[in-house]
Picture 1 (tube, rainbow, N blue to C red):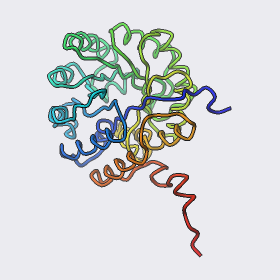
Picture 2 (cartoon, rainbow, N blue to C red):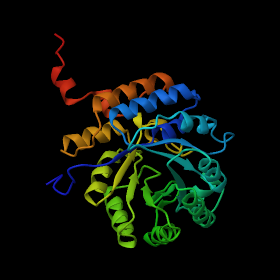
Picture 3 (cartoon, rainbow, N blue to C red):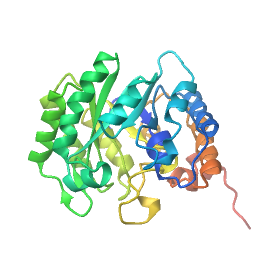
Picture 4 (tube, one colour):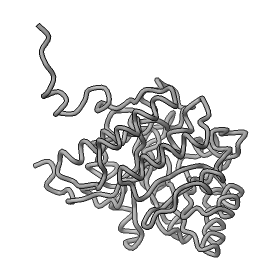
Length: 314
């Protein structure tokens, strides 16, 4: 029976302010980002990835990273994360009030080259340095194990490559890690097996998943990940984001739409602590300020209640 192995509750992390906005051509001003952040907090999120320390020449959307962190509301029990692509980015982040930094380490060499102009080995070496500096500053580090299962222009990632990457990430001393479905072509069994592998290598390290949605499996992959013991799920408002240099239609290249993930979890009796109606207000505001409509089924098709209330046109 579907759902019998699901937990009664799940932790969800919205990454739209980082992974979502990196794919939006027009650069949002800081006030608009803070408006989105306030909406996310009002919806009930307690962990949020709010910016990136990629170089502003590469991603001008995050030239205000320091300002966003400085102006972010300080609320008890809320954790703010920022992504760093390399050691230099990490040093910038550690000068701010960010709570936790996330460093991306792709398993696939070509993805690492295109995304960070480095090899996986170079990034794994840098990760150990980042952890040392972060811990000395009293901050935590999450390793984002990208292309954990499938790589564009390559195909499935061999299990031994993922295992080697996980071992080195764990040896670097990270506080947590997540398995990223970077291509959006991942399937439920890959998330199940990947989480089992990570948990077997480091039972005491929290393991999350980062969900993309090219094949439309994002929400069902979320269920599979939770059933396998994932500690948190990552998605973004409106399904914005993703690695937009991947070939294909923009509407399928982004993250799993968080509103679809929430809608599915709630329908399966999995509590998230998120007020979906308030979250949809954030989605609508995002559509307005980014000029990009949500890619979610919920935004386009409505809720069950919406459809039940619909009147036939005679």
